[in-house]
Structure formats: structure tokens, C-alpha cells
Image: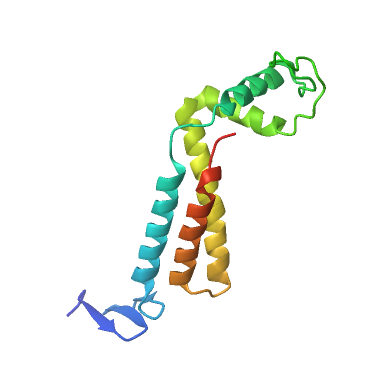
Length: 161
């Protein structure tokens, strides 16, 4: 039986035994790894589907133009240079960094790039939340359900702006 492999199963692990004394152990956490992976995939697929949609907020065009002006002049806008009714009024541009980032992404990848950037940020945030729940030994089913619920409740704010 030289070179033959045999499969040994217990309740908590799967071991592949080799006749040449090398062993490979695959740890399975109480037999529920497939369920954990399935719940994670469903959760993050749902988040992705909810977060990828065409731009519906028209403020983005202002932010893109402001980002372009900031990038070209290397100065943060301190007056409103685009508005007719409040032209040249002093204001605080607290979104200047996101405007520059959005402008750069738009120049590289267009609207699709902005949508994918937004979806990536949302996925990363929910992944970190999911990971924190797992580190705290939370129930995976409850965690997935709550993250899907939070996604539904916050999806109205998933705009690029």
C-alpha cells in the first residue's frame, strides 16, 4: 500500500493519513465550517447587491468639480465659486479630502470606479464589524442576521457624496 492515502474521520477533525508518515490535519470547528462560510457569503453578497447602484444623488457633480479645482490649484476652496445666489460667500469646505479622492477615482475609472469604490468601503466596514463579532465569539447566525438588518436600515445612506 505504498503511496496509498486513507481518510480517517472523527467528530472534530479530518485527517488524511499517508503511508510515508506525513500527516495533514484539517481542523473543522464543530462541523459547522460550511455553514459559517455559507452565511458569510450570503451576508456579503447581500451587502454588495445593496451597495452597488447607479448614482442617484446629483451633489456628486459638485464634489467632483470642487475636487478638480482643489487638485489643480492645490488650495482648499474657502468661498463658494459655483453658486449663483451665494457666489463668493465664505464657508468651510469640510469635505475637501473626499472631493479630491472622488475626483481622482473619477478620472481613473469614471462613474463605475466611484460606485465600486463606495461598495468596497461599505464591504470593508461590514467585514470589520462581522470580524469583531466573531472575535467576541458571537453566534454566527445572529451576527449575519443583524448585519443584514443593519445593511437594510443604513442602505439609504449608501450614496457617493
